[in-house]
Image 1 (cartoon, rainbow, N blue to C red):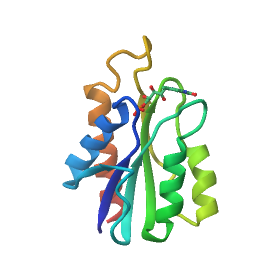
Image 2 (cartoon, rainbow, N blue to C red):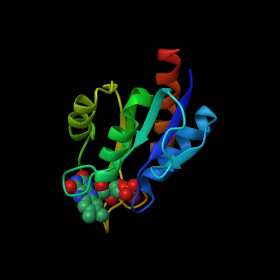
Image 3 (cartoon, rainbow, N blue to C red):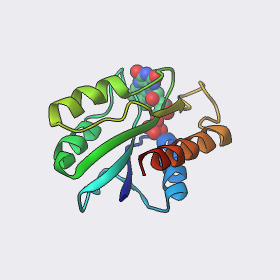
Length: 138
Ligand SMILES: Cc1cc2nc3c(=O)[nH]c(=O)nc-3n(C[C@H](O)[C@H](O)[C@H](O)COP(=O)(O)O)c2cc1C
């Protein structure tokens, strides 16, 4: 199974998870300026909430790469929201991409809120999520 890790970040929180996921799976974590170079069995996509939605770059990445994404799995951080599944699902449904229901999401620092998050435990959780998903799908 070939795997890719992509992420969008503004302050670096989601990048920390992306690097842990990528390290666990032995691939590189790349930002969204890197389109998929080939059809990919499983794409881990990291993203966060900004004003109750995911960033437009995340939506564009899914749409622009839809024909190369066989399955998409989400991970991410936010100040208080528990999941980016809903806004991403709208995009994947429109683009004909299979979105895996299980995702990893944790708190991310935002101003004075959630200092130090994602922390070591969050980072470990993201790596475990990735490992378990890959072993379930293999
Ligand atoms: C402009 C802006 C808007 C945000 N809006 C939300 C929001 O609506 N809900 C939420 O839970 N977090 C919100 N946050 C917090 C971020 O989702 C959180 O800090 C996240 O960890 C940022 O990840 P990043 O560093 O990878 O960009 C917002 C942050 C910014 C900068």
